[in-house]
Length: 255
Ligand SMILES: *[C@@H]1O[C@H](CO)[C@@H](O)[C@H](O)[C@H]1NC(C)=O
Ligand SMILES: *[C@@H]1O[C@H](CO)[C@@H](O)[C@H](O)[C@H]1NC(C)=O
Image (cartoon, rainbow, N blue to C red; front, side, top):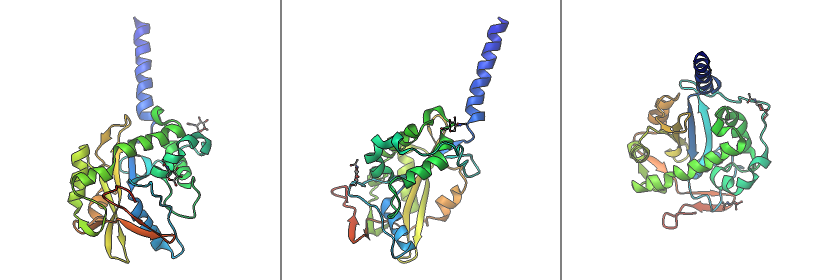
């Protein structure tokens, strides 16, 4: 009897340790970007800049999955001896290029993946369900198809359009209605056109990988209230880079 109790106690302690001691963060922030806005803002940095946009990039793309302790940023770079190995994800590369590609021209094909893995993936890996490069990137691919903002926004008549503008509340309601949690929504201010462009949408997950509100993350208020204005948000449909025009066609749902 005594032995059984002791074993149960040890097991309970281990379970507790695994969930709250080894894992040094509270939520995963899953950040997707609108590739056209990312490209436009990249092109503004320098006249020589180009973007990697492909005809098959017809959806929002992944920026990263970021383990986050509420009220702080990070942790980051949790295991510096765990370097990025392309071989681990080579089978998924066609999908990673389409859904998690580096929009910035002139950088290597793997640079964004390497950065996201070493900075964030090595921290996400504290969770058994994400404890390899393969699992981390697979989770991103699973989520990007499940949390499809082109589809979600279009249900509320919010389409990429170079002229039309939307309100912050329209965008917020579309996401909140679909998924039932508080998202964080980012805009980038375009100095040239003086427009606020929709740039990133974040959803938050707990350690069981269930959706939770993002309102505990740092900068949440600035992100949702500060950097997108209440009105006049554009959701750009086209950009010209490398001598080519990329234009999102609503009818074809592709570029
Ligand atoms: C850090 O990464 C190395 C290399 O993959 C691995 O062997 C080690 O177990 C990791 N350490 C922790 C604490 O996860
Ligand atoms: C998307 O297009 C890029 C560039 O042509 C290609 O390398 C990649 O394999 C494509 N991915 C898919 C899933 O079609």
